[in-house]
Length: 290
Image (cartoon, rainbow, N blue to C red; front, side, top):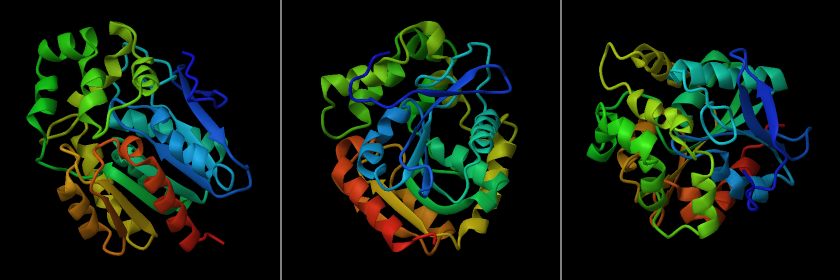
């Protein structure tokens, strides 16, 4: 999967399941570490502005979830929330990452805060971007439709519709041909797209859902992090993780700083990369760990 705009050395961790989890690890090893966790249907490629802009001073570890990006994509996996948290925790322990700044987007919020709930002593700062880690009754119809039987399989597995729709709906300014190709590249076939459908169906909207209890546990852990330095950077034109989700974070993390990007959509790192990098750099500088 050659991608010229993703020039970083590919690294792999073999999970207990036997599949390989891809990640990049850029920047000085002794520097403060940013762990960047993506959502669906993106992959680590989304964070390339942060890697390019901050890796001279910080260590950036950017994994791809199982089923995404350059990670293995076993078709028989259930790709549940707890499994993704397991995988991220396993990688963090294998690399012995500590004093972490979590940079979380989309599903990365629940997965990253799931890690935080299990390993709070390793988490020092939070950067949250158009994400959630708590229950919500909000789900756009265009997302809900992807959960329907048969329609979901045909659209997401057969037509790669979730990625193709995101190329237009997740951004406010057109992606370059190179970026479009990069987001499509990990998912060339029906069998490679299972995680996309699984993520959509794993949104727990009611008690009894297989991931409901996991999300409740993560939600209940959030109060532990109210004293951590936190930054909310929000694409305000996001139709999925709207500003209502940012308002919820403000209630849960009352000391968090908040930056709104009025011209950015869901993939805010595509719409306003320079602004996001500048705000994150400023936040890190004002909240040093040492």
